[in-house]
Image (tube, rainbow, N blue to C red):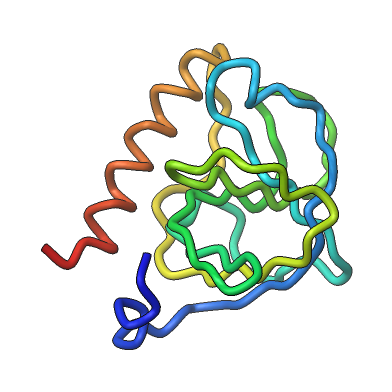
Length: 134
């Protein structure tokens, strides 16, 4: 995404942190996530957001979950996980900035990772349209 495309948008919230290793479950079904760790965690409603993640001097569209992960574990641990659209690089230990633009939906428990993947594909389509300038 070009920087000039972001000039007309104002994020709802900005969060900075470091990309850390997760469980790798998303990668196993074709939707790897950048797990972003920092304290304090963002004080925004739990849910899935259309975001822009900034890595070094580049910006990428992402679908980011903030909250618990009821489809993959029963723990009350809050995480920030960004699926970066059309991205395949090793960014572990990198400092990143996440700009949150639009709440897509709340946190939801799905019966399987396959069902999560189907929903994330829909969330990606929504995010592409949100940030489209065509």
